[in-house]
Image 1: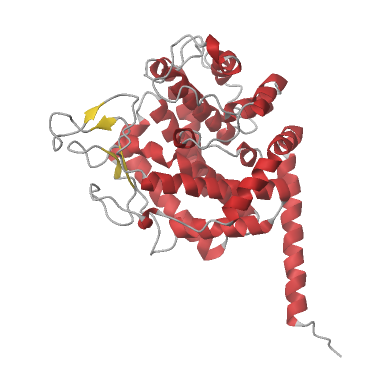
Image 2: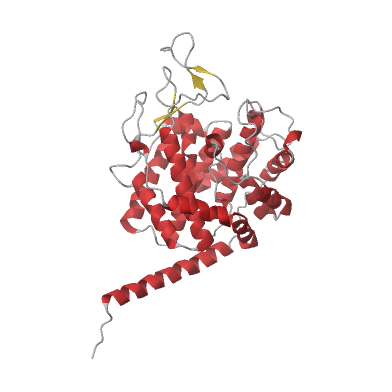
Amino acid sequence: MIIRMPEMERYNILKLALVYVCLMWLQTATAGGGDWLKRALEVRRTQIRTEAAWAMQQQPVTVTASSCDRSAGGKHDFYSEGDYWWPNPVHADSPYIQRDGQTNPGNFVAHRQAMVRFSRVVGALAAAYVADGKRASLEHAKKHVLAWFADSATSMSPHLLYAQAIKGRATGRGIGIIDTIHFLEVAQALRIMEKAGVLKGQELEAVRRWFREYLQWMTEHPYGKDEMQAKNNHGTCWVMQVAAFSAFLKDTAWTSFCERRYKEVLLPGQMAEDGSFPLELRRTKPYGYALFNLDAMTTICQILSKPGADLWQYETSGGRSISKGISFMYPYVQQKDLWPCGKDVMYWEEWPMAHPFLLFAAVAYKKEEYFRLWERLPHNSAVEEVLRNLPVRNPEIWLVKL
């Protein structure tokens, strides 16, 4: 006689088996960061749980929820305006004029805020999964992911034709590509969601299609090519984004390109012999820009390093290396009043934070002092400028083995 298992019982067994498989993968994945990951999770566990509880209450908000009559794009097109461009006091209708380092409070920022919120939600939920193994956090993150990349009613167009616009001068600019640094942690969370089996099948393919189209636009459109050639943090952030997105897509051609770009262009072109970034130090916010560019470069190293190609150990023929860049900034993060280049014109008091370069470098070089400094610095902020310029907020999700 054949005894058939009740449908509900079969479902529960399959569900338990899936949970077991996910937990086994998570145990293996977190082992990739060793004790450093465990220690980092202990430092931030309360914060991770608090932010995850907030994120679980959030519903998706995409670019379609708001619009600006100054945008040349449509409902699904991301729009932002150049931060340091202001109305001309001579005549309100004339083209905007520049005030470097001074953010215009009248700019349209709703799309950027929605993107930052999206990144915070998904990053927090991915971190919660890494910390506690709760699959429900990834399931909720998926709702936000599909709203941004797959739902035809709410998704964002896979381009940035209308980012960093300037009234009377440009409907969009290549430097606007820096706005999507807030997709970095989303892309890393997507890798975790795929590995955990939360994102799969047609849903996974729809999200991949969006990123393939966006990566193609970033690498082929004149805006993307211009941004790639930028000599400062914009060029760094182009590489950082392409590296993260191609890692999710498993596009080895572009990850290899980014590795070469880092070695042949970014390090020798941006770093001085002492490890500083001269083009950032010339700005009106040298401290914030130097920290931002160092975070971006170390994130590139974190994404791309692998056995046989460790960017943390790479040094140019001229002696430039990421370790030298970290050594230059570390004393000024440890003791800010030693900073030799003058105060930033805005947001001087808000820096430094618990920058990801400190944790990444602690793991890469086994430097206890880097970890201790990361541990004691502030790990969160309500200041919009800080949120915008610190896209890696959950460094733990970058330490898992994928």
